[in-house]
Image (cartoon, helix red, strand yellow):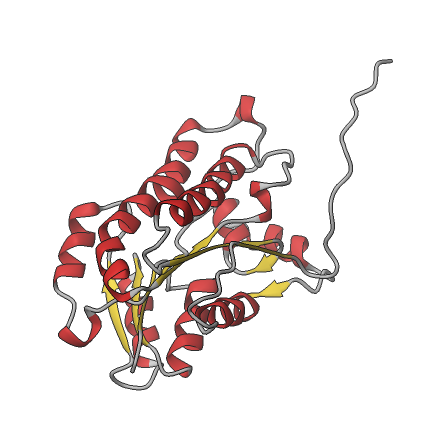
Length: 250
């Protein structure tokens, strides 16, 4: 039986890699994203009939609902939801941060994620499906400038555990994926388009790739249905835990 996955944030990075990974493994894929041109190119790059593109901003519930209501018949039975859409904005400390950026992160990483999850849950319960939420090591390890971004990812981790508890007995699996450094457009977006900052961050670090995380998601999705991965934290070998900060007098 062919299964169907809904992947948010599919027009770049981990989401785009996940579309290719799941389609390549024989899944039907509902790929969502804000940028219709990228979405159209993504759909065209995959074998015909395997991917359905749905262009909308995850924060726009009306557009989201219209897109889900318009799904072709073959794509309506959703077996897996991958909540991948998310972003970090800004690198300044809290006292200098732009509150509008904070609100955008909360609206995208938290509010949109829980709203879409609630919308799709009846289909997932009916299918004894699964949810994979993309959190981050920032949920566990704070760093300067991480403030609200880390807070949103900590929410995603805890929400995932809460879903597991609430969905007890339904057969629905829930996993929180918590990656460290992955080279995508993440830092370009975070810095307002500074490609140089992104290049500097990843230079010589041998970071993980979108394909690495996509392959991990596919592995989780294909595990036997009686087995649940609750949380999975992963980093490149080059990355480890930072030391404590100490402010000294004098």
